[in-house]
Image 1 (cartoon, rainbow, N blue to C red):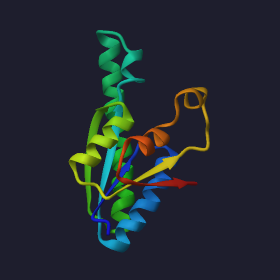
Image 2 (cartoon, one colour; image 1 turned 120 degrees about the vertical axis):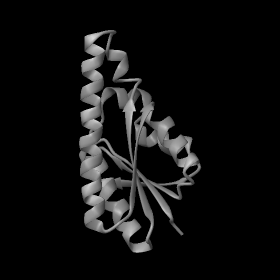
Image 3 (cartoon, rainbow, N blue to C red; image 1 turned 135 degrees about the vertical axis):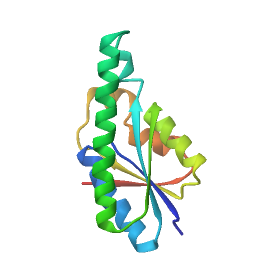
Length: 143
């Protein structure tokens, strides 16, 4: 049923919960896990100006992406599943949807944070946006 499972990760507790669920499913059905980190240019890059600040921010974001992907890769290895990694820039819900379509993903596993910020209340969370923007099946993993 599932051959390719997409698990977006940012290193948060919610994404680690999604990794737990997604790798367990992948292990049981022999699926490949696609680990995706999205650099949210809407939030991150709008805070940066030109010059040295932007360069420092880019370096920090690259380090965060590597750390999140390394942690996810370790969890997937422990579950004994095959993985593919990717880093994309953009709005997370758009990047997740596009990656899913481009890679014929059968299931997207996303974590849902228990924290609700004012921004999420006003504009919706990434999880909600993914649910609304994709035709791929989505599993919302809660802690």
